Each structure stands twice: as structure tokens, then as C-alpha cells.
Figure 1 (tube, rainbow, N blue to C red):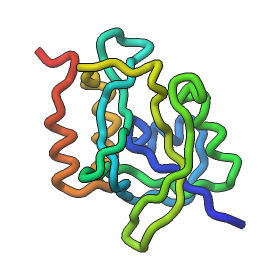
Figure 2: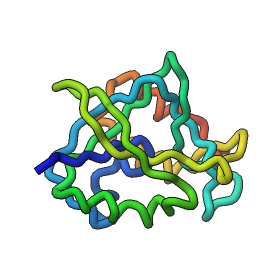
Figure 3: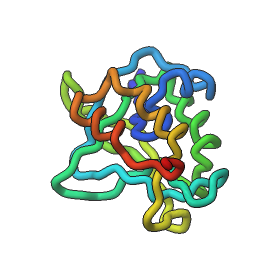
Length: 153
């Protein structure tokens, strides 16, 4: 059986959130996606003026995230409704780096129609990303923790 993986760089870096969403996985590890940068320009549907995570091409950057080894190939379909695919995000295959080499994985790309400039995440949304810190490099985790938020005073 072919192993299926899901690379999360946004709120699904929180393994408990992914469990609550019903996605079954057998292993979690950190991974890196070269040639992309993290941003928060995907408009939140529930909180006007705030953004959710997205990735975009950036040749000299790296996005770190949480890589889930899925319990079966059908598991990724369970995430589509939460990502509102294909309306808000589209799902595509990428190649990420892990401690044991390069592997293929699914991830989500924000659709241009739901993007806006100058957005920041809400603090409660960013907290989900920070739950993934055990799987990230120290520097990347610190960078996330210092990200400006829409609801900061």
C-alpha cells in the first residue's frame, strides 16, 4: 500500500485539532517545504479583517510544518470540507523534506479569490500553529510566536 501524507502549515499543525476533525493518522513528524513562504493573507470567513495561513512561492524561503502519515489514502478527503476545498483552498501534491529524506505529501493552497493584502491571524488561530512547535525548528517556532496578530492591542 502506498503511504499517503498530509503537510500542515496552518492551524492543522495542532495534532489535537486534526484528531477532532476525524483525520486518522499513524505518525506525526516535522517537515520543510523549500521555495515557499508562509503568510496569513487568506481571508477568514468568520472573523472579518483577519487572515488564515497560506503559502506562496518564494525561492529563498522555507515553510516548516507538521507531516501526518495518514492511516489510509481516503483520509485526506476528510480534510477537504474543513479547508472548504475547492472554494477556499485547493489540494495539491508537493515534496517536503523530513529527517529521513524527501517524501510526497498533500497540502492546501489558498485560492486567489479569497486572498487580501495586509491581513494578520487572530491570536486564537495562531495558537493552533504554535501547538506544532515540537515538530518545528526552534527559530521557526520563535518566528511564529512573534507574528503580529489582528487582535493585539
